[in-house]
Length: 108
Image (cartoon, rainbow, N blue to C red; front, side):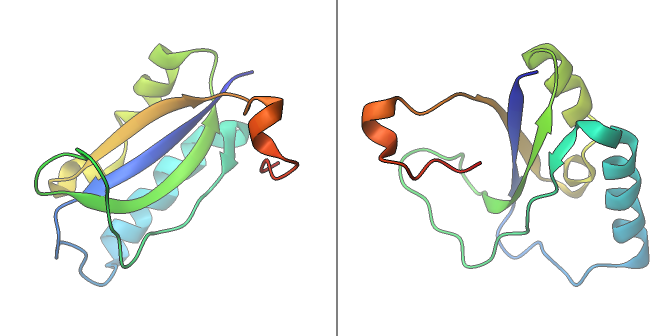
């Protein structure tokens, strides 16, 4: 099954210490994914960006899921707690790195 990355976007300075409510929301959302959650990911800190990554946002973290297609991955992303905190989530399908570029360093 294809895999997709969720890149969580947040407004700068909008990352207060986790509350019991926000922690519960994230746990419930991840729990609802079941075995489709491939990599829980990690929160981001000290973010930087190149190019156009959306005005007024920064990388807040990522997760990797498996889904049959982009529409299914977007349906899962609609439940992301970051959306209720004035943030966003970008979704992209991950594809294999061409052999000539990977040089044996492709993540597994």
